[in-house]
Image: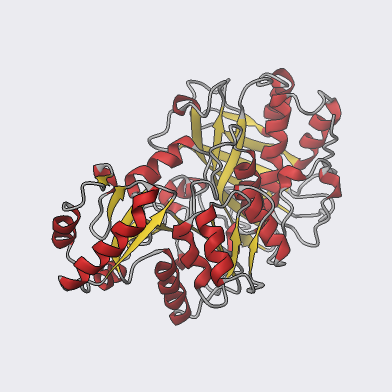
Length: 472
């Protein structure tokens, strides 16, 4: 059984509760809403350390991975090391409707920016605010009515669902052996009618008609130009994909690219014809999100070891206090504890108590308040209670705010699921969590002290019925 040592050796913390005037710390209730978790480019005051632009289906999300392990590995890496100073962009062919459905089915992080409908829609933040400038740009030489009139003349084209028909995208299914001839003829007819369009065929069945200025590549180029105009051009950008409509992502100058191991032949053929000598584009040997992690390491873009891959946390040598890493590490321990993947040892519980201030408190989403020490004691009763079940925990949008020289207020969403089938929606629970951490009188090797934890249920997500089934 793997060891998971937690170096928690603290002396007592001088009296300073979360509501006292010194240091002055914002009210916890002011952080307890999703709207207060900043997630747009505006939260960065300078250039992003790294911007990852990733396709979703079979790139970030592996539909052949029932445990979603590669995705969860990426989640832990991103939240522990990148979220605070980097940008996560999802670039998908899915419409907003299908994108939101995928988010309910898979343990996905919240991106800072979402590019949808094959690069025809760009939105920002939790509320997915649209980019009006991008929409106006796409209107040039585009008439959806004319596209519909011409495509009706091809009986081989089958319209996709209504949710996939967007203002600047008309989507069909067509057999692969007929696709090329239809694309050539249709392109000529639309040009004759005064339109300037592009036709993209991907996945061996999807045919999308877009304005010429649209597409995943153009949307990324637009974002980079916008960021540069604001003085926030990312230090590095990594584009990730698996199919034909992702080829454009790796065509942008000065952008690193990764084709995941399971990339379709259409993308591999494009690479062979257009980018085989480009050292900034690689074909990973790992599938999906694992391939993205591999690319981060290959290009030396930053840390590339996911906390989920670390079996002995005492081996994690930090040069500075990293509140986000502390949060990720704790909830990974909690998941392993309840899955019975680490031994039921009093040593673990005593180490946990050592990092909790004796007078520290936990406010359950139901409003029940307990001491942190009492919460640690209850862990004894739940060791291995999720063994054999598909129980997972992940944290999202972990954003620390330093409130004085030795204190951090960390806000994030804590997700929890449990079931024997694939991510049953009724068993997904989430709360907005705020944690007060302190480095007072401790060293980096000792780790941070937990002073206070406050949680509220995320609106619109099913919640636990009482405080006995939801811990921390």
